[in-house]
Amino acid sequence: MLVPVGTDEDALDACLAALDAGTPAGTRVWLADNAQAGPRGVALIEGWLARTRLQAAHTRRAAPLGEAAHMDEALRACADADVAVLASDAAPAPGWLERLAECLARDPAIASATPWSNAGEAAAWPRIGEIAALEYPSPLLAQACALLPPVHPELPAAVGHAVLLRGRARVQAGGLDAASYRSWYAALIDLSLRMAGLGGRNVLCETAFVVRAVEGAPREGDMDALCARWPAWHARIAHCLMDDPQRALRTRLGEELAQLARLPPQADLFAGAS
Image 1: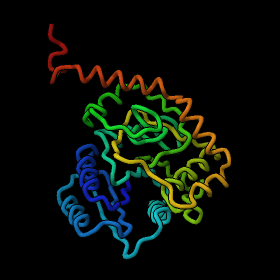
Image 2 (image 1 turned 90 degrees about the vertical axis):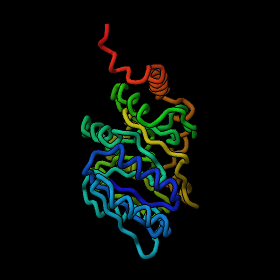
Image 3 (image 1 turned 120 degrees about the vertical axis):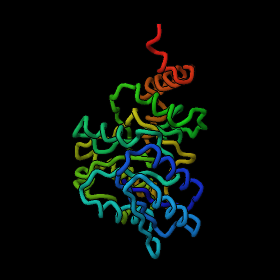
Image 4 (image 1 turned 30 degrees about the horizontal axis):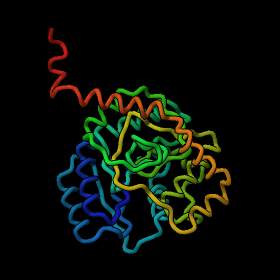
């Protein structure tokens, strides 16, 4: 998996802690630093590398590239491997990576799988297209998501808080277009649409959740370039936000969370008692 290191050191610290707690031991993790982390951020990374259960490595460029160019460089280095990309200001709930991998395994046509997030645009919960503060802890979010049926409905495009990209689909589509876009936000949308044009599916992995405080954002000129290449994009995302095709799934997740929150502590210990 790939974590492009950002400048928010407190968020990075929380991301690494959540990653270590909620990801299987031995998972390969690449912290790719586009000359973004300051001295404290580098110290945080070095301390985490010394104690993590994950098979992790950190690289740092001497000078920064554009965001999309840096992501393209990193993904190209992964060749045709399936790669999960996690924003460094996001905190994954336990089991997130396993659920994303299971999603890709269920349908070979799936090119990208995006988990729920409270700042996930079309994959946002509890309300589509909104950023919401969460009252539930990550373990409870993970438990509730695991109760949802794994139907993996279509999204307009993958979303940048976290996404698992199928390597073959990414390579077949030509990878990221770092010449046309400056941000990961826009380059990921463009890649998603190209993979869909080749028959791939960009889906919601409703069985996983990743918490984030902010949404990704395009850089200057990105949306103009996106709309020039994909004239129907704005209308498509607008219809999705207005129609909310996954409203029933959002409601179901809320119901599961409310039910779990009402259970007494260690309720499973008494489930078989008469």
